[in-house]
Length: 283
Image (cartoon, rainbow, N blue to C red):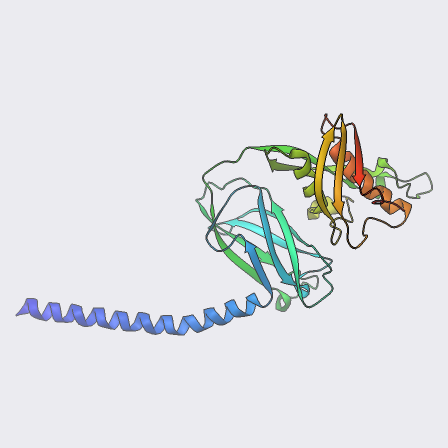
């Protein structure tokens, strides 16, 4: 008799537990759906998606409303499962961000797999120059760190520091003396020169590098490297520039040219650089 009573009590407890669980899920689900719908109206990530297995370097792509950006960028943070920051960087707009429409963006993060476990989070933060908490927003994506190590190599990306390119009167000289490199890691592939130039064109500088005076006008809306060929030391780089963003004054065009040239010539097999079509980077 006692056994029957215990069984009945256990069944009742199980039924009550299931009922409570279902009610909680019903209460949580609408809120989760509403939050997901709200954030999807502001930012959408093509890669990585929730639960993706990632490795370094991580290339992040997607689109966000122009209001998510400030000066064509917004911050990105990669953390471990406990929320400890592994690395951070910036996403840059790939077209005009002064709009309320969706704007494509890209970012690249280099990182070392944490020892705290295989799970982590990629956090895309709305840029908030006001610093007011009510203007904060973020998209948090659960990710898995890949157990496979991808061979990498270190390369230099040459940008421009005007403070290192001035005459005695403080006038900017617009010369190669203002070039300053930052180091990045890229996967070892069959096209290292092309991969490096493409990374340069993304113009991804850290806050520390910017504070040191390093700057660039890259990325230029619409500018795309479409091909690269090397023959007897001459590197021919083909670009698509539908919006004619590589032109302008001689100072600006020269600096844009010098950045690509110096980045390419770090490779010993490159002695000179040629741009196609030839009217690119002209005053």
